[in-house]
Image (cartoon, rainbow, N blue to C red; front, side, top):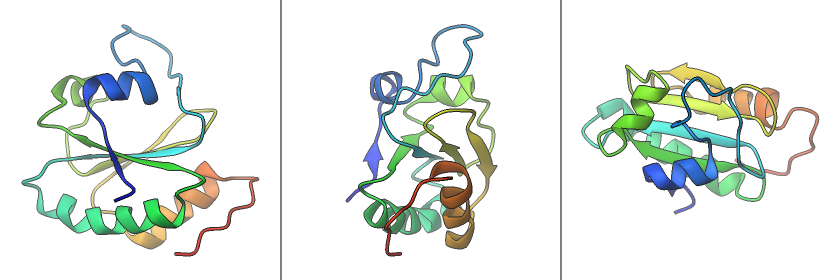
Length: 127
């Protein structure tokens, strides 16, 4: 399993400090990331999970694929206005994340990786 499940404390250490009021977005990671906001009872989330696992395996040396359970991490979901799940953030090393709502296709995930996360960087993934 190459996806990484985050607690609230892990999120603060690895992604962003959502606890700072009105803080400007500042990504803390050392490589681009995908953050999947999901719930175990959500059908579309369960459909997306194996796709993200494939992506995490294929791009394991280039991006992180994080999973945040909105039932366990309600404060994070509230801080980032997660109202529908799954919601996926594509977070480049620098700049603002791209937020997508719904069970997006593998093709769309790969497009976001290419255009947002690894833009101007060669990548070697075999998906």
